Image (cartoon, rainbow, N blue to C red; front, side, top):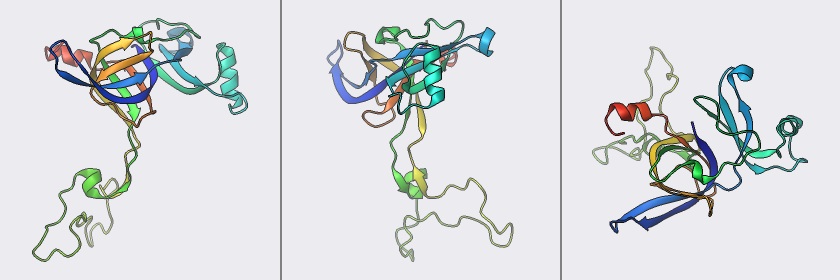
Amino acid sequence: MKGILGKKVGMTQIFDEDARVVPVTVVKVAGCRVGQVKTLETDGYEAMQLCLGEKKRSKATKPEIGHAKKYEIEPARHTVEVRSVGPPPYESGQSVTADIFADGDLVDVVGVSKGKGFTGVMKRHNFAGQRASHGAHRIHRHPGSIGMCATPSRVFKGKRMAGRHGAQQTTVHNLTIVAADPEREIILLKGAVPGPKGGLVLVRGQAKKKLLKQKGIL
């Protein structure tokens, strides 16, 4: 499976050949390199580590410094492992550029969604809320009953309630690469990707390719 690490720059729009507006997200993929390459013989599975950014040795831990020294790279600020089918096409220390993907490819994008803080059940879980009149007094956005009385006299684990919303790893499947520009070190993805501006995103080969073929999309 192919993959590259980058930073989300933001959204804009371009025009296609038919003069139609296409909303795109710009991902900066400069400085992505390969760390450890894992093989069946040594690790029991095939994968490669993608590294982005550099961390000062004074701020890196001893395991991070030793790991980077072993593969002759600088300690990375971000490290993500991508599984591969067959031997990985890269070696340790090699740079990964935007031309790993071609225009029109379908990819999955992994990022951490925007944090919304503490939110109620209507925003967090799309609850309908209470009635707006007929005796409802200041409970319009409340969840309602959350458990039983005598039996079992408790609230079940996993009950959907108010709490922290967002700031979770999110994957968006089957986004189209509108343009992959290795010279400017950017990738244009059709539509939105998770995370704020400047957030770390992983652009990887699609995981549901077999399912799309079964449906006749590919």
